Image (cartoon, rainbow over all chains, first blue to last red; front, side, top):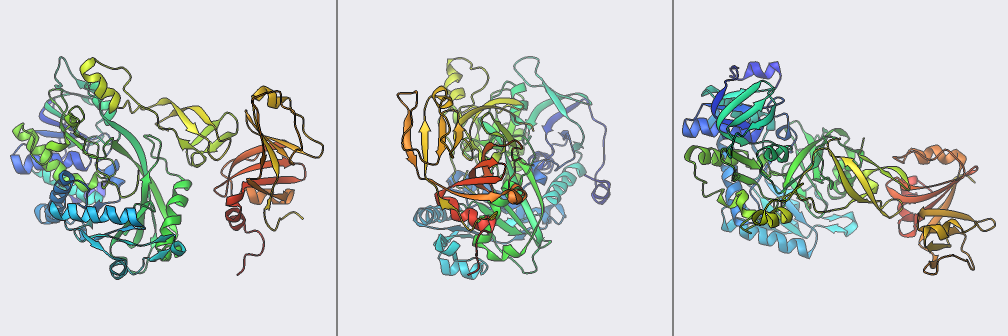
Length: 404
Length: 73
Length: 135
């Protein structure tokens, strides 16, 4: 966070105490949201968020900011619909403009298998509270006239899709700052440039963290780390069903038109939306090899651009301005992992893969309730780490915008 | 610059000529009987650093190669 | 001519055999050997018969490639659409992506012969801007 931003928001910087009730490792969306909800919902303010860089400098600042609840399994639809609802109230609640914009999401398919899949998605969504309808090619054309319904000379003919009017985007760094400010106003400490280097675990219980500014003891340590969670969890003796993969994205120069919805095609392997600045923001699937690298590549640009200009020919006239990469903790069943780990004093909120931004408000709200009440809330009980031992995986093919 | 891998037959080539070989990635050591099957089935070492892998050089020799890669680069 | 109009279907012989046995195969007169992998050899042009010191060798006519010849003056243009360095010694065999298409290249003093899977030849022609593409 730079000095300009720090001057704009009501932050107070405190010295690192030697002890807190709750220490949250990772100052991204999920860590800050957990701290924010501990302070605002449960009056717990003896809380520190430790961030090795600056807040939002990890994947919270690298994602493509899409908010949606059109998931493929009931448990996920309920959870993400809660997040959609909390996002839509966040500006009013925090008094900060997060540039929340309800754009609607078109999820297109190009053949019979995809059509079946999207019909099933719309039924599951409606049954569990998310607003998603099946649309015909004619309706696709009305919602987004830019789509070439006969894309690729018919090779990617649009045969239908689903439309989720609830889907939105928000400015990712504003979300992070609004949550940090809201928590700090109530007394939560956010310590930037404070790297956690180890865990204090004298016996069977985690009792604090080691940092490059000294040890900090804690009633509870919560890992809200993105990208290095396996390493942190290993320090506690916890194993995770997670592999970390890079995800790349890019933006074009300004598009003079107004491109209203978010458009995704899993079969063509990309999704696109227009930023408030008018740039077209494109993303695709994760890189196939596990990696912690933020390196981006020309190959990604060419692989992502070809299907994009095939489906949306107007993109041909734009040029690519910037590209970047983040790293995604992909759980084996493509669902998040929240709650107890089997080691006392050590909780995780992880497995956020390519869907972490969508879950920020609800993930923090539910983790805060778990910490404050020491009971797993019903909404996130399906997403416990225990599910792998209990053989009740939450495999959700609808969790990713593209095929993985 | 894209990730590059060294093929012993063809030389150094960018990653888009290669197909990543999915191999099991269990934790470094397995624990007792209760945990072992869960570890094998689901848990991953998710190594940060050097790692032995298999890559298929689809755009070149068309052979599987054993390649060491640093996951932090 | 240094710029080809298009890729032409190539007839060759493919030998998959023990690496030691492939080492013993001599290049035919006016022909060339391309070692695609330690156990995989492509012989240009197609051979009427060949002796391989491996009784399990697979010897098949290979009609899956198209080829075109690019003169030395065209090398820079090809290098510009390749993400890897062409070899400097001659003769040389190299394989990898050219303009995103997998190719095999046979370099000698006068230029390079580019082999591409026949089904992808028209894509490579288009990406390299060969022939008259005006419609």
